[in-house]
Image (cartoon, rainbow, N blue to C red; front, side):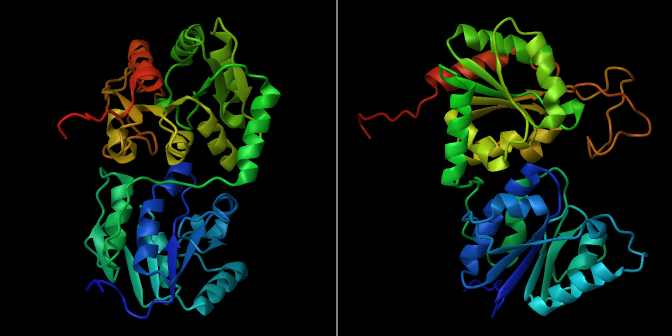
Length: 371
């Protein structure tokens, strides 16, 4: 046994209540490492309701999911707990967790939540000089998110490491994805484009997505534009600027079905947003469009099937301010309220070149002579 392992562990709580798909997926390698180190312990994920719907019955290393009440995710620490919150913590204390792990990138509120569990050992990231945790690593913003969580579980002797988040698809998700493709009546191999992103500063211009789509149609591919209902205006803007025909899916697609759609595509081209991470998790070739600071935390660690194209523009084009040091996108700074795409200078030619490499030339090569 590794000297860092905790003895007689029967139950481990892991807290993560971030909304993003990528925020969830980057935790999975660490969870699998944790499960390998504590194979007989029950790992309980404390998260959001959609986490349970998405992760249910998938072999991720998570054994059970408990939803954290929305009121606890935003509460004021000086505020008295209401009856529902009190009952929630009483239920968690009855679970008798041995270890509680904070996967959140903040300290006070999440530590407060885990402290209520009365676990023997609390693990987290120290964001100040206070030593709140029993074991901790210093919090550094510019660190890849997968590596960050792996470092955390290594504090518990979890050393069996894989770097790529992967998910397994249910048969019904594959069947539903195939049904949707048949319903759309696409006749050719297709490339899937995700032109949306929650923050417009991470959105590549719709005119450039339209140009790429038309060029790929000329090369013999169908184009599928996908997103959720918030992306509908962006998708329509791409379509209006295209010369060719595009197919569209953005209404009520379950996350697992979207992942299955990725496996049916030849390539995914996407802004730095949740569906890009989802495509990687099912081994679909991807082109990710990144603003330079964000690629440090969210870029692909495995680049044999994934190409990252980077915009190095840092100053706001309106006022010259570099927004929100050291946290680029959360929220806008008081000095700069302008909203621009910070990845607008990524060239269409570079995206098409990357697409050509992945669609036509990027194949593993092994020299069979002399080795």
